[in-house]
Image (cartoon, rainbow over all chains, first blue to last red; front, side):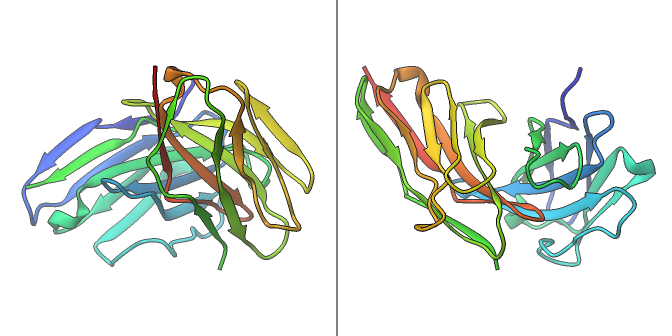
Length: 115
Length: 109
């Protein structure tokens, strides 16, 4: 498909386990973003990749969270030693470049549930 | 830092009523402004955008005008439908996209 693809769509895991969430951006999009949407909350910015520049990690809530983007395309968000408060929908978005006028295209998200 | 404030919901309206969802922002520089919509069970979709002062974004009968003097980007629709029931997010983008907390709209027949 032509949109942003995220996997898995749902993930249930036990507290303390590590999880990896995957995002395939739209082909050719140089900017990639991760957001978190908790129940009843807005969207919380986590991390932003732009081309080969150092990522903006200012939104990561703790050092248990990390993300990488290999080859300027696919990105993986890793949460180590998961806690119940990590339960949320994790959204990935991509856009064509850094231009502030370009909207972001969102994936359907990964719903993460920590038991 | 940059931020977006939008009215809390839920907003409950009857079909064909007039809709306003308020959004104000704080930003250094000149951000672009967006409204995104999330229908039940679906992902976020761009609804409309405006990239400079006095621009009006419009789509599907919704409109919003970029007001620099009041730092606002209120969403309006003259006659809502049941199918407009969704969560609406105001957002600004300078470097990265920053969202408001979302406003749930419920439209009843």
